[in-house]
Length: 203
Image 1: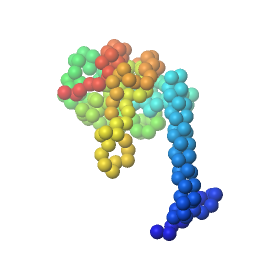
Image 2: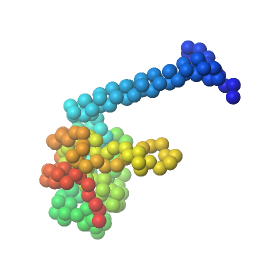
Image 3: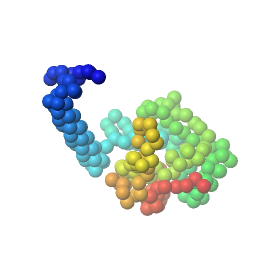
Image 4: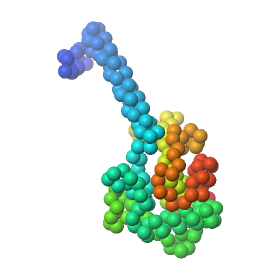
């Protein structure tokens, strides 16, 4: 179409063999450079993960202070409700039974928005399957730091969707599991959930 391509080094005409060859070489070198940069970034992140220094997002009920120390949420009501949900799961043995218990007793579940620790950042919502599935399988509530629970699966990628589809890995394929990294809301669920892969079905 007679379109010219320019960069900081000059202007190229893709119709000319030499310009086309140079553009191809530059494209290949740029792709290799991006690949190496991505590999170095991934290696650096994995190194921080193995040292336990990787600041992953914490669930509601745990807060990270300015000095990177992780504590239980200072809101006693949040601590009480989360402790009740986890203890009821240990008692009843079923996420569905815990969901029924929460609905029967009109228990509202907390969800903290943002990184603040103020009362205005908390939203209280009715118990649901999605909320139970987010709380009960989360190893952070058991004090465990884990990394690599999910991975992208190109085979499940719908046409035209840019964000990759993430799938859960079996526990044997997790990149890192560090017990007692956070203050735990419960201990026995920690060991049992890690053993079964922390994949629970609500029904």
